[in-house]
Image 1 (cartoon, rainbow, N blue to C red):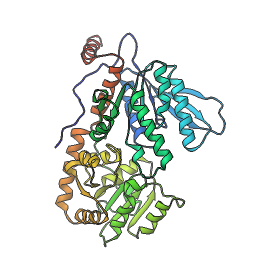
Image 2 (image 1 turned 120 degrees about the horizontal axis):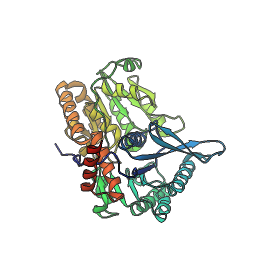
Image 3 (image 1 turned 90 degrees about the horizontal axis):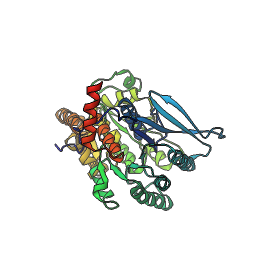
Image 4 (image 1 turned 45 degrees about the vertical axis):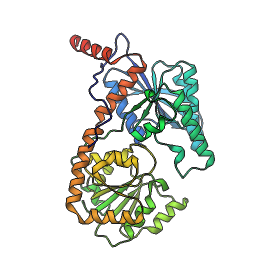
Length: 404
């Protein structure tokens, strides 16, 4: 089993005296988390740092018909939620939000943590204003087949700009780190994975409410996009008679041809409940699944896959370097529709295989994807940009404990 790339032995102080260290988190729709992996991570990190004495601000997108107060703040659990109003829609709203966040952050003290690089062109303003920046560079967005030439060009340019406008880069996967090393020296890159909490129990009621029997279904939890292989997964499942069901979580629209093709390919044993945002329900569906299906081909350490490992799921994953490193021995792998169909059959028929993969999943999650290790590693990077060395942090921590 591979070892975690996260250094977990660094102890850093709960507070820096005489002033609190400050951090601003940009690049998400905001917290409390309600949208995706980055929002969940931002919430976890913000609460963690606030609890250790940091002054934390998180930018939150507020879509309105008419702007009456561009920026306003409120306090939530010791964190400053900085609400930024935007009156645009779609991609334009995201760019407007990113720019307004950068303008505001440039006037505030503290380190800036940026999640994603889609609006990295604006980070040049932060650099000009002397702000310290570290950026989680997410996946290789411009490689996704869903984007047209113009969008791919935009993402490619912003990847380069983000790489050079940031003082430090964070990769959530070794393959992403290798890719970023073609943009910046490796000394500028930290590899910090995503985290997940162990799931050791969950109620059966949310599962049965969807007409499912615990342990008798496979599940996919992903955006319904071609690079996530949702259509081949549905086709593979429906190619044979099964003694179980397939649950595909994710928004489906009748206006998107790929989504229409998935509906047409599905038979009566495929359950399409749409997107479910209640985390307790998602957790129960994942925990009681026979196996978790992961078709992602582009990206790094995908949060949904990490959460499946922490829930002890056997994983059926697309065979690529991203998934191989993340899941390791917890998964069996497929390359096409036929091999996916065969792996599903193995999951249905082989109890020992399912059990052993589940054991391996929990081991992998415990070794490489503990939230405590992930959050401490990010705190270490923030201290580094503040000019605090590891030795100084440890000394301050000891001093604070003596005076507590």
